[in-house]
Image: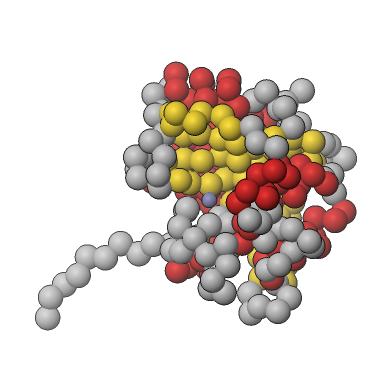
Length: 240
Ligand SMILES: [Zn+2]
């Protein structure tokens, strides 16, 4: 009988366990029910809730693992700017994460289901839980397997995208020719046939929005995680 050396990818359960362990470090972690589906989403709060709030989400596409790992790393290393409070969605597509698929187990691209009150169990759970808050900035962590480098989408005239790309480029991170895209959120939702979480937030609840994309076929996993960590920290630093 042969011996096999296998590398076990962390499962969603592993992600969940690491977030719950953060409860010992003042991260308020709860599970939000996805009504109509046999799963929950993790939702975490961090920081003094009287401070301006930042929304950060990751993992809406299950084949883009660097985002969830970067968000975990930011908490596990005390890497979030203490001038703000945070609402965090550690992995908004658990079934896709475990299957390594963009879509959820229901076959839905969840990041097209944030229109009209939500048309997936995951988007409805997020929309309902987010009703109580307004945000200074909403960040969503993604990856792109067609990109030749990092790029981002910027909403609300944040003025963060260009200096962010310059900072990463200066540190040696490859940059995609798209650099910084600044679409109108409503026109963009129309064009892609569904509303994203960031498009919804910048319409209703967030002053500024950033969607960050790391190049999943160009950089190794650890560098994509480090790029997301650096990008989030830079974006927060740029806020007044
Ligand atoms: Zn994505």
